[in-house]
Amino acid sequence: FFCLCCCCLFLLLSGSSSSASSSVMDLGGVRWSVDESCFSVVKGAEFWVYNSEPLELIKKTNVGGTLSLVQLHGRTNIVFLVGGGKQPVESDTVVCIWDDLKAKIIHRLEMKSRVLNVLIKNNRLVIVMFQLVAVYDFPGDPFPTLISEYETCNNPQGIAAISSSPSRNILVLRHTDVADAFVSDIGGTSYSQRQGDMICNCCKGEISELAITADGSLIASTSQKGTLVRVFETNTGSKLYDFRRSLLSTSLRSLRFNRDATFVCIASDRTIHIFHINNGNGKGKVLRQRGFTSFETKNQCLCTFGRGGSKLIAVSEDSQAVIIHFDEATGKEIMDREVYSLCKESRAAMFCVDIEKWKKAHYGHKHKQDNVLKSFAKMSSPSSTTEAETTSTVVTTSSSTE
Image 1 (cartoon, one colour):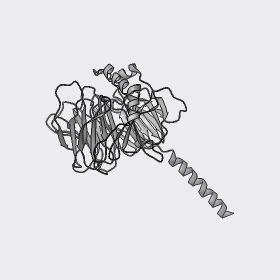
Image 2 (cartoon, rainbow, N blue to C red):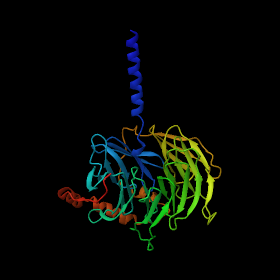
Image 3 (cartoon, rainbow, N blue to C red):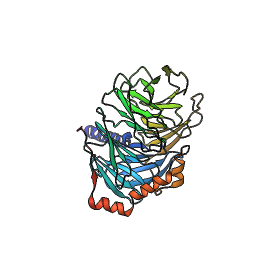
């Protein structure tokens, strides 16, 4: 009888622990759009799309195969999918372009190694692999066209970032040396004067995170040690700030600037750290400062700033999104935290191109919305879709094997 009770207790505990572990959300499946107006969450064959402010569900979609990542093209109906898991929608070497209005894949880009990250901005599509970054003209005529490639060091996390301002496309990625970042103006905008390429020595060890400001003027980096956050100018490579997070090593994630480049945040184990950037102060010398403020979280999370500046949005591994309001002068929380449950809803609104919302996502910048939307319509038109389906056109790019 005693043995039977012990067995029952063991089964009960193991069942509860397995259910608890299964409820933990993989933060690798959470990705913000480049303009941070919305974000996606991947769970198996489904992806959920949420508006950032106000935080609400936009769409839940099942694509019929498991996914490793989903990258949104702002608030449009174009979504980029990469397969993964037990029954992948496609190989993890293929980027699928999904039209959510048609609820199907309209084109595929086949790479030679596993796709680790996808960035989409204006008319530039950036695909990050283990030792290579490929840049495409998007949507192309009629398909995306490869315009440049960059070799990198081993980059298993797919680290790269692109400026969010519609006027400049400044890309920062890892260079061939593990401590260096490479900054490049990948064009595709009406800005007449392109910025030259620049190699920036970011740390003594290996880079773990990279971020870039909306206008592309500053980059931030962290190393595998996780004790410092450094900020550099992109046009000269000069170091402006050494921010001390702690003397203790830890893994860091989700390095982000706010839209006005006055703050930079980073998430560690169960803490979000914020550092203050005094633009124009201390010119010509490196400023070494401690953190401006920090906030404890219940679980590990990813974070970004709200569009207002004095607001943090944190998505945690317990499938919750938390909004933290803070005072920009003192760093103190100024109201109760807003908590939202993710991936719980059973029904959702249609995800389509809402031109007014799309324009609001780019407020403060001049942008040719009409031309971009016409390009999306051209790519997903019946004629171009038919050509993609009948000829099975695949764009390939060379890459080192992981």
